[in-house]
Length: 196
Image (cartoon, rainbow, N blue to C red):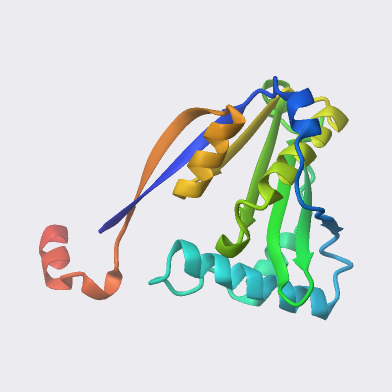
């Protein structure tokens, strides 16, 4: 078994004016429509996705094939609005991604979730501490205003992510552990004896 810790954070943005005046490098996020994306984009995105998986879990095989990832991103959800952006650096391809989910009024849980904007993001390690996370935080503020949401909910399992969210003033609301079993190392005879 191996354990990973995944923390969920809640951010109520009280630092709006502070965030808007902070200086960062000039980054230009590109909103992605998965249904309209061409093969060049998908190739660059999958290269990024695989690098992120290696950063997070270097000993694991890829969680999804390229085709599965594309299908998942193209799925239409009638009860939730999903939007996503990428950051592309010349010569390096996709270096970061950011996405949000908000409930639509027809969602059964809309009344209890209408204040929430769920967000997820990632930055390749070598591009961290260069203002990209701050840019995505600004984007989150903009989207919270656009969708009339009061609370940003996100998660992280990396030390850099914990430090960044703490710096933003986020409050950790939930911590969970993940137990993982390598089926190649299971003593199947022992399992059979348990079943019997």
